[in-house]
Amino acid sequence: EILSPYIHRTTIQKMCGILGLLLADENCHVNQMLYDGLTVLQHRGQDAAGIVTSEKGRLHLRKDNGLVKDVFQTHHMLDLRGNVGLGHVRYPTAGSSSCAEAQPLYTNF
Image (cartoon, rainbow, N blue to C red):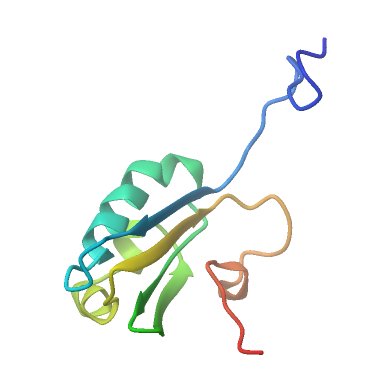
C-alpha cells in the first residue's frame, strides 16, 4: 500500500543519524553538544561516527569506525573547536566498513 510517493507501508527505512549546530556566540563550542546529540542518535547507526567543526573558517574533523563513546576521547574533543558543527553516525547501507566510509567528509577544491 502506498501512503505517499515516499512512504510505503511495507518498507522499513534505515538511515544514518545527522545533527548540525550553529551557535550565535562565536566564543562557545558545539563539540560537547554534538557528542551528546550523536549519543542520543546512536540507534541510527553503530558502524561509524564523525564530527566536523568550524572555528573562524578552519575545519576540525574526527571520524572513525565504532560507537560514539569509542570514537571520541577527551583529546579528540579538545581539538573539535568552533561554534559551528556537523555530526554523523553511520548505518551501512552500501560500501564497506572501512574508516573511509565514515562521515562527515570534506574536500578542498
